[in-house]
Amino acid sequence: MLAQSRLAAACAAAFAFASASALAQVPAGYPADYQKIIDGAKKEGTVVIYSTTDTKAAGPIIKGFEAAYPGVKVEYNDMNSTELYNRFISEQAAGGNSGDVVWSSSMDSALKLATDYALQYKSPESGKLPSWAVWKDSAYGTTYEPAVFIYNKRLIAQADVPSTHAALAKLIASQTDKFKNKVTTYDIEKSAVGFMLAVQDKANDSKYFDTLRDTAKGGLVVQSSTGTMMERVSSGENLIGYNILGSYAETRAKTDTSIGIVYPTDYTLVLSRVSFIAKKSKHRNAAKLWQDFLLSQKGQDIVANQADMASIRDDIPGDNDVDGMTKKLGNALKPIPVNETLLDYLEQKKRLEFIKDWRAAAGK
Image (cartoon, rainbow, N blue to C red; front, side, top):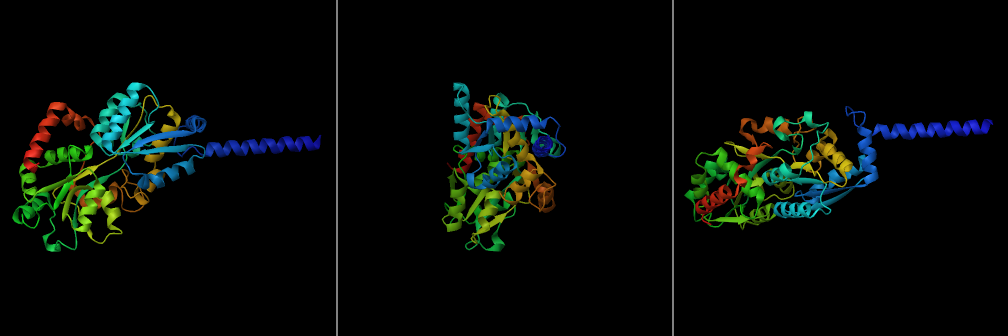
């Protein structure tokens, strides 16, 4: 009888320990019933992410998430913004399997998807984000990434490095022979991110098309990939690139001494990768876990200090977050808000007119 009592007590203790361990997974400050989401996610076992963030950059976040929630695996699909948009829409229409979470650097096309396909879910972390980064408790800005100029440090003298968009245009217009086919930026027809940044440039520069015309006087080389632009500037095939995501440029510059970086002082656009959960998510609980982890202090610490994308929060160790960027750049920072203004130029007629005007000014 004594042995049975001891066995029962041991079983009870083990059960209590297991229960406590499970409950301990609920992050501090989260609702008590959040445990149901964790348990549901473990039953689902998987979360499918559709993302424009390359797998290498996302790797530390995935590793951190899977360590925080053992038994929930991340199926990560890395694609360009246009591919993501078209694939997600076609799968939603067909009613088959698709991404549980969309996470895209193309803020405008991501918000367009969110207006039709996002699950309304108020993350427990939403109060820690800037108000402009939360759209209807459905879509969330997750990073704080300035758009920068890059230049070849071997081939451009420090005294000639431009610090504003106007100075960039003036430099190129005054030395068209030197910069002939040596200036690169996004092809706005092939890159959704490039199109969005060009629209935001226009919103911040009253003489935008004049600035673009001067910037293109030497001949503008357009690309659909940030990696290609950085490679060309590094090699000297191009001398300057603009509207490059600072997160990628900073990562490249750590190991590439040819790459110089400028944060424009007239205005620095700030992109925030938009994330939302699909209404038709087949792993809804796991998707909520991912969203909350990505926005949490722990997740954002990984974003800023391991994935090298500046954090949307202001309470992250180091200076790679909103607070650190603000101390560095102040009022020059122009965050692109996650709201309906992003959709203005996605209307077909307006989009085509903008592309036509851009091509005329860019000489394309």
